[in-house]
Amino acid sequence: MDFLRILSSALQKRFQTYESMGVADALKILESVTVDAVCSDFNMRDGTGLELLIKLRQKGVKVPFLLMSGDDDTRLRNEAQACGAVFCCKTDYDLIARINEMVG
Image 1 (cartoon, rainbow, N blue to C red):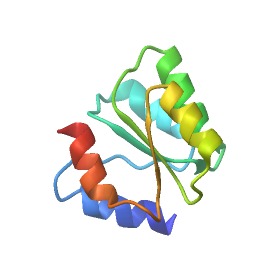
Image 2 (cartoon, rainbow, N blue to C red):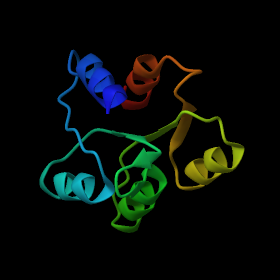
Image 3 (tube, rainbow, N blue to C red):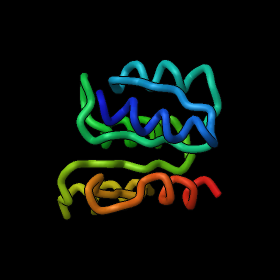
């Protein structure tokens, strides 16, 4: 949760942000607003960011998706990329720069 608040606070300097702790809540938010990108942690309260990504793709939502994890897991990286997402390990990247690149 601390990471969510820090990232959201940093992103609010350039973007309007919406915070969600879980897959269900994120999907509910995304039903009522249009976003330029989704930044999701892998571990969520009621599932995973990969599950959120898959559900969004099944609904036809094609916005850029950044899936973050504390672990640099090759399997997770490959699954995210197969669904059209960018994967990054939270410890290895400048996340704000990566998000700016993704949104343009």
